[in-house]
Image (cartoon, rainbow, N blue to C red):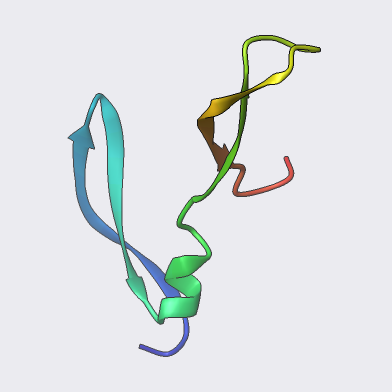
Length: 64
């Protein structure tokens, strides 16, 4: 591999979503993987966080 990211032809569906396969150097593959963080769970805006629950939040891949 020469540092490029390749989208493989094979596709699948998982939970009604299209799945793609990527090949390339790890740094390039990592750039297309979603990142997640945990944040305090709140029942609504302005509500205090629940001290017993966290929400898993997926970060966007781009700012668009």
